[in-house]
Length: 166
Image (cartoon, rainbow, N blue to C red):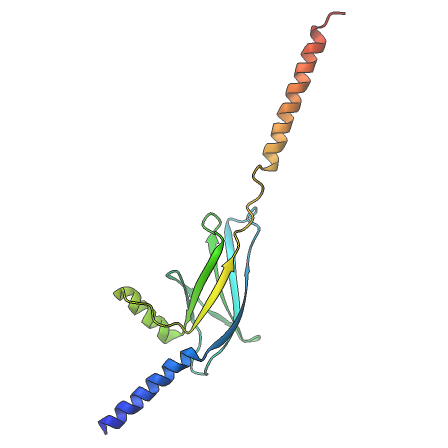
């Protein structure tokens, strides 16, 4: 009887382990790219995941930062979003791992114990180009510089004209 119960338990564990590897996904991403008017850059990843019915993506991990995965019931799509300070937002690739509730608990245990990260439910690759921070010289500074040069030229010509005797 013990052997049978152990075999059933192993079969259930293997079924849940295989469920994580059977998820298929497609994703699209968006990030704000005009840094001239922003203080923080918003990142948004929308993805569809085809997982077994008992597996639901719930949390995402980005460099140790926990993010919630939100599901849109109308479109059946999932979203992960976060913001980052403009000064810290640089171009590059990010690897975002997505976990279900059980996988997220295992992740937290592994982080506390200093162990290796468990296998994620999904892994999203996200490439981000650095936002445009504006021109090297601001328009106001260029206008001020032009005004100073024009004023200098006007004043110097005035002194040249008034110093001549007719």
